[in-house]
Image (tube, rainbow, N blue to C red; front, top):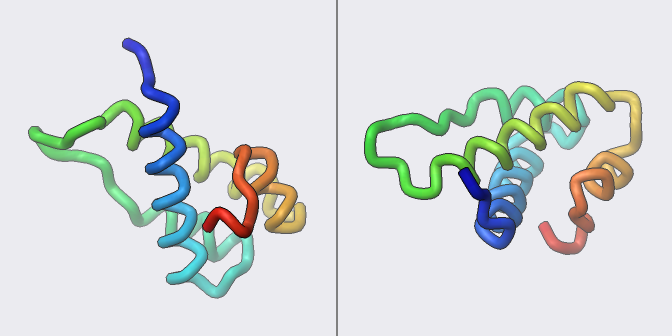
Length: 83
């Protein structure tokens, strides 16, 4: 299965924007909000891109809770200004 990087990046930015806006802004808060997002259903379009983007964001904010948010975002290939 091939992942469309453009779609992956689009969903990653969408999930990060949602998590940052709807959390307290801490890495733990962002991770908790990301953990509430579900990618399921029988007719989900671009399921693999959505799931991969969500898993990568969750993993980054879970494993690096002690890092500054900007560094975690850079690790994901995202600038804060993109969100």
